Length: 294
Ligand SMILES: O=c1[nH]c(=O)c2[nH]c(=O)[nH]c2[nH]1
Image (cartoon, rainbow, N blue to C red; front, side, top):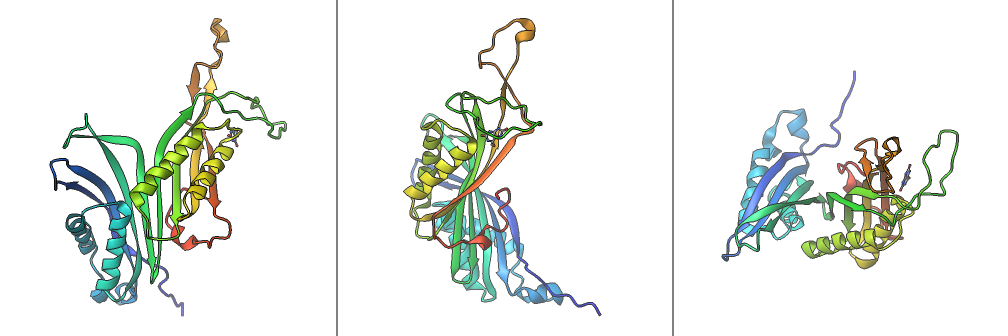
C-alpha cells in the first residue's frame, strides 16, 4: 500500500490591490499596495479530510487586508504586514505563522498639489514578512529601478580563450534594472526612513567610483548598506547588465567615438550577489518564495 502524507502548505488571497487615501487633512496622502496574505499552521484536516473547520477563507483574508488599511491606515507596507500577521496568529489558535507580502507603487504630487498625483514609475517597493511562531523576519526591497552611467565603467583583465571576442574597454556604458532585497534583524524599524536611505545609498554608490565590473559595483552598494544600517544583516541583488554596443558606422564613413549605441534587450548579463554582515545568523527559510535571487 502506498502511503502519502501532507507536506508543507500555505494558502491565502494573492494580490489584493488596496489604495488607501489618508484624508485627515486637505493634503491627502496616497499608499497604493498589492498585498498577498498566506496562512500556515494546522490545516491537515482541510487537505486530508475535507474538514474546513480550520480553513479561514481566503475571502476573509482579503477583507481583513482592506479592513486593516482603513482601520489602521498604511504607515508603511511592512507595518501593515506585521498587523496582519499579529491578527491572524492571535485570532485563530491553529494559525502558527504565515507569509505576507506587499508591492508598493509610489505616487508623486503634481506641482505639489494636495490631491493630484502622478504615478512614480521609478521602482516598485517590495516587502515580505514571514512569521513562524515567535520568529518574525522582514525582507524589504525594490525592483525595476533602471540606472545608467555613460562613462566611468570598464571591463578588462578577464580570461580569454578561443571563444572570446569581447574587446577590453575602459570606457563603456553601464546600465541595469536594480532588483534588491534586504533582510532586517529586528522588526523595530522606521521602515519608510530606512527604505529611503537604502535607495539613496545604492544610487550614490552607483555614481561614486570607476566600476571595473557590475559585480564590483553591486558589492560596493551592498557593503555601504550593511555598514550604514546595523538593523540590516543581508542584502541581495539581481541585476541585468544591459549591454550597449557602440554602433559601427564606418560602412557609411561616419565617425562614432562612443556616442551612438545599439541597446540590446537580450541576451543580457545577469549579475547576482549577496552581501552579508559577517557572523550574523542566516535566515534561509524567510527567503523561500522570493524568486529571482541566487
Ligand atoms: O561588468 C561585467 N561583468 C561581467 O561578468 C561581464 N561579462 C561580460 O561579457 N561583460 C561583463 N561586464
